[in-house]
Amino acid sequence: MSRALEDILFDDLGSRAQAITRAVSVTVAATLLVLAAGIVVRFHAAGQFEGRLWEFFAWKTTWAFLGKGLLGTLASAAAAAVIALVLGLVLLVGRLSRLRIVRWPAVAVIEFLRGVPTLLLIYVCFLVLPSIGIKLSAYWMLTLPVGLSCAAVVAEVYRAGVLAVPRGQTAAARALGLNEARVFAHVVFPQALRYIVPALVAQLVIVVKDTTFGYVVTYGELMQNAKVLIANYRSLVPVYLAVAVLYCLVNYALSRASRRLGRPMH
Amino acid sequence: MGSVLRLLADHGPAFGQALLLTWKLTALSFAAGFALGVIVTVARLLPLRPLRFVLTAYVEVFRNIPSVALLIFIVFALPDLQVVIDYEPSVILTLVLVCSAFTADYLRTGINTVAGGQVEAARSLGMRPLVIITSIVLPQALRSVVQPMTSLLIALMLSTSLASQVPLPGRELTALVARIANDSAAGVSAFAVAAAMYLVSGLLIAWAGATLDKKVRILR
Image (cartoon, rainbow over the protein chains, first blue to last red):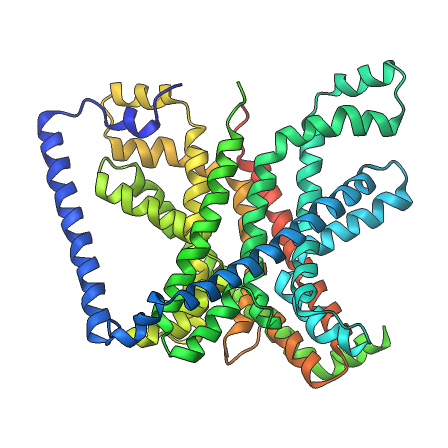
């Protein structure tokens, strides 16, 4: 493992440069502390430390309610992820097909779902579909669009993985007499999956983020439950801060997992 | 097809304005977010521990927070702290923060592609670290991140749809579709037109990005 670039840039500084670096470090730290203190003062001046804004965080019911919201988020995200993985595979097979009549529609669907905002798809399920007689539950009005737009990205991720599998693997499998479907299912795809597991996990972060739109369709996920709490206690800053921290923790854990999986296996 | 034409006759100018607003939000937040991301990247290289620590936290927070949660915090919670930002600047600020965090992340990956030997060589020539960063490391790193930055720009363009979550005076595409679908039965065609506009914008960005990438990529 070679050294990080910043270490090469700044190693063996002269004693004067080291002293300057130390002085600047201290100054920066002091500035940051002053900034943090400024934020605390601002909170105090705006009356945001008043007990009534925070006391309900000491109650079990609050956390049970937020926990329920988080479960709602995860339930929607999990189903969306399953949709994305399965439909992504279908789209991939279509995309790789040699038949134009299969390949072109697959390309069109992928480009369409990738190129349109998830929020717009949610509005379609929420506002447009009911007007033509299709009624979905709040859960599906959120999960379906999130899953669909993720499926298109997953299809492209799969494709990158498939293209990364060395050509010789396919040739060897064919030479052994495996047919097209078995070459894909037993030889190419399992290896492709290995390459792309980190990218797939990273995609989960996007799914979790997209489920934040659940409040648009009043599905009881974290954001929606936060809004209910706020309506009850009129405590905007503390609740939104708590929710932001929860989202960051979940997504940070996923990002870390993705990076860990991205490390070479040996 | 007829319903789309009728829709364009009724709302054509509104769609034009919505598309322009979408582009404006995208361009402003990308320009500022990219610049901020470069600054964060360079600042993270400096041998200043506290700064590195805080900026790493900055990048992780804004990479992982859902943009709409950030927007709602800025628009609805900050006024409780006596910080009032108008709706449009709030949307742009949200996108700038998120864009800068991703830019910093991608650029860091780009920097890792620069061989350490180049830096060692430059140092032995007596170049100062900051000069090495701006004239050797950054140019190569920037050239290697054209593709991820193109994807980021497209994602940012799609993210401007979250402006529909605040009462912006002008409407961007998603807000316009939501209103038309609410007021009339033209939802399907409004959606089709908006989707086409998003798709074409995305394809244009992708094409520009690919052209730029071909021009500046370093072949190794």
